[in-house]
Length: 335
Length: 273
Image (cartoon, each protein chain N blue to C red):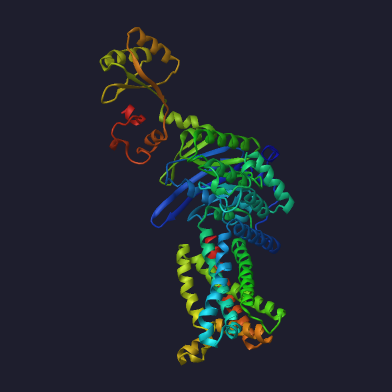
């Protein structure tokens, strides 16, 4: 039996029902202290509801959850002293400036007037917001808001931080900045529980991942374990001359030793990619046979494919109903 | 860099308490009231109702009704100013409920709920900060009245006491609107319900005209309407410098409203918070 210091979060059988919708339908989670735990799932899967229950914002209809051994329902006030919550929406006061927000939250966290000022300035500097400190939040970009939101969650230096979709809607550069910030956070000893819609993000940050779909955990494990369950990346080739198709398919078979899938218009070939080193051999073989390519791409497994593999249905609708779009879902490649 | 790079104290080694002390509740409430005042400073247009409304209403009513009701403007002022004061400040208290609803719908409210603060603090802070609005409205109404020629006989001390009475009573009434704010679905419905309650209370009173020309059934209502007692109390204080029975009735009415609506509001609020 693990002691409470080993587990930052232990939840068993969490249920939340809204009307006749079982938003969360028996979720079990165990998050080890000092780790980053990713909850992965599409919109409406119940990720936010799980976080809200763990963060004492919502009362579970059934089940039991503890944070560092403290019950989220009966010891809510203790749990609140141990957590920081950053919502999907920037949960800061939009009518106040960045400094005013941080001072207010510092005061509410029990810091004195002077301490609050110091803390606010420290955090503004840390998150690169000093220049914008006095500006109204209405003029903040999405990335700046998220940073301020995260800064506000860190005032009490909580040992457990909930990040609800910390990078949804951010541009790639801001997203990677956010990832750096989260990594630094973890290096200080914080435990992070984050939700995301992006497999890539969970892969980059999380030690363990739970995949949630329609309120249930459908898979749990490390990023590698999860990826192994959905298969590897695929190689996509587009030929200059569709007439070369059969030669190209033969070359792939002999060099990579795998079967390929052809797109209906036959201009594109998709092959499972087991060993990236062999791609060079393939390209050399194609050159020797004078087969010209217009495009070469490597397609990683997407969240869609994780879902296809784990749940048998796609993220939004069944991929079978979708005409063959430019991104061929992995499920079809294997089919 | 010190903020993020310093090692975080582990969850089990912290000293934790599962209840909030009275002292902390008061401190949290004042922090939330401070937030309310910062919001006002950031969005000064919120003060339009407590600054322009008393000016416009006082000037308008004085010149429209003055001659007809009291013969001339100067003799209408002692009747009108207490009435318009009560009407303006009470109307202002509706905003408490509307803003509370707007606040509770915002993302920031989730953060308040996730902090180890007294649950009641956001509500208490909002009610506390709004007393500043009542003070502004009260001051402006008296000043406009003074400019128009109103010279309260009761003296400055009694005028201040009258102002305080109005502020206390409006604060009491704001619990009603805070209750609507907590239970209603949207800010605009709070406004709708509140004005439905407010209009009969303020207009079916002796605030603008003496009640003796009204039909008997209306007089009956006007005479039990707590707003009438408040207006009479303010008139007694400002114009005569006396504390009459209406003063105590107004305070009693305020106490009854708080006794009923404060527990209701707090209960509804805690269920949601």
